Each structure stands twice: as C-alpha cells, then as structure tokens.
Amino acid sequence: MVRKVLATVAVLAGVSAAWAVPPTLSVTTFDTGNPAIYVVDVSVTIDTGVGDSWTAAGISTVALSGATFRYRFADEVDPNQPHVPLFTNVEPDNVLRDRFVSFVSTSAGQTVGARFRAGEAAQIAGGYEPPTPTPSGTPTFFNVAFFDDVPPGEEGSGFITRVAIDVPALYQGTLYLSTTGPQEPGDVRLIGGPADTAGEAQSATASFQHPSPLVLLDWGVWSTIPEPASLALLLLGGLMGLRRR
Image (cartoon, rainbow, N blue to C red):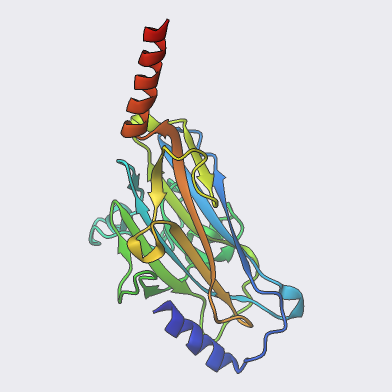
C-alpha cells in the first residue's frame, strides 16, 4: 500500500530525477520517568537544501515477552466514538494528555504539540508490512503505512513515529534499544517484528526525490535479563562450579 502511495506522490510531483542525498532513518528512546513504560521514537533526516521533502513512511512491529503496545483510543477523547486506536492526531481535542502512546505523524519536533495534534497529522494508507487495506493497532501488533498530503508539501527532517509499550515487571529497568541485534545471544526481545520483516521491527520511509526504493531501518528492544533457557544454563553452570569447590 505504501509503495502505491509513493508512486502516486512521484507522478503528481512530476519528479523522476534524484538530486538530493537519500533520506535516513534513526531511532532513539524517550525517557518516560517510569520503568513500566518504554518509548522509542523514529526520526527521518531529509536533505532539504536541494528541494527534497518527506513524503511517506511505514512501521511494522510486534510486542513480545508479555509487553503490550500503548495507544490512545477514540472513546477516551469522545465517549460517543468507538473503542479504536488513534493512529495519528492523538490529541484531537487539543487537550494535553498522556503522550506515551504509539502513533504516527508527519515530520515534526520530538516534543512539539503539533506532532500530537492535527497540525502534523499524517494521512493513513493502511498497513505497511504485511501490506493491508487498514492499519493494525492491537496489543501486540502495530502496523501502519502513512504519508503527507499529495502532492507533497514542505516536510523536512523530524520525528514520524512513536512506539510505546507497557513493560512487564520482570523486565523493568533492563531494556535497551539496538539496530544491530542483542548485546548477548540470550537477551529477551520485547519489541520485534513479524515474519514479513524477518522478526525485526522495521521502519521505512521515502522522500519527494527518492520515492523508491524505500529506505529501511531494522531495530528492536531487548532486556538484559536472559531467556529462561539461557538463565537455566547459567544457573546450572554456577551450581556445577560450587560442586567443584
């Protein structure tokens, strides 16, 4: 779905040549002050000096090991609305609320109010990976393809996705974000991706001058607490060491 959107953007813009440096993606954590909530923000860097701009993106990620995604639901804002997650514009009434929720936006500053409101709301195309007609926002699956207005506007570098989870008590205070895999083979993964992204959380983006191929970034969140099997081996090794004494 997001690929079709990007193709439409390119046609309407009338641009086929690439003059700017391709966009890049990066991920960073946001300190929530609460070990029970963990937040990852995805940002895009755009070479705006030669007229490029952000146009579209996608996110596909799975919550694992008891973690669950946090959302703002429509009926939290208006009791007359259905109990469905808001994928963008998570403060539609312009009232400051809990911002540690999963959502997408057009590129904006990490903490500016417009990122969470209509000012930087993205257009939702469906699910990114796997491609689906509608986005997914379940406790364990967050999958959204989204884009800027068509034809593209003047969106530059900024933050485009927030992924927030509730952290099980066992793992609180032990999490880390990585784009290169776990620090140790036995570390427990709390944020990964579906089989479509080889088990990694995946962010994707495109720009006005670089509609295809998509720029991809695989990432994940792990705990330094080993998996049960690895922990059992460690304990067994320790017991054997004691017996030798």
